[in-house]
Image (cartoon, rainbow, N blue to C red; front, side):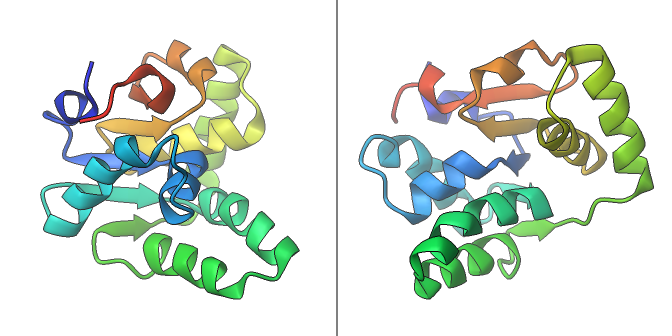
Length: 149
């Protein structure tokens, strides 16, 4: 299914780390799949949510390589963008993450990400982690499982 079709009924999407990294770093294998999402964010037809986990994961390589301009681009997109809401994780997210982790055997970062998405009222979760497809509470959009366009 084309990415544009998967986005038709989505108003708010949670941004997992990999798709953001692919877009900011212009990964040629994924740019044609991520571009429509970020275009919709830019034109206001889609809003997004991100968390400290997304930001931290996106910043590791730029910090390691001393690429401060790339780090700044991640901050601009995830924290300072008008179309992306940056949410902090709290006790409610921790409790929900523990429940998700217990039921789905998720890693703690994945459980916190999904909990953040659910608490933020997201319609979908943008990722490239196909193992998250087993979560029934939220629609998962896995980049490797969609077509460009």
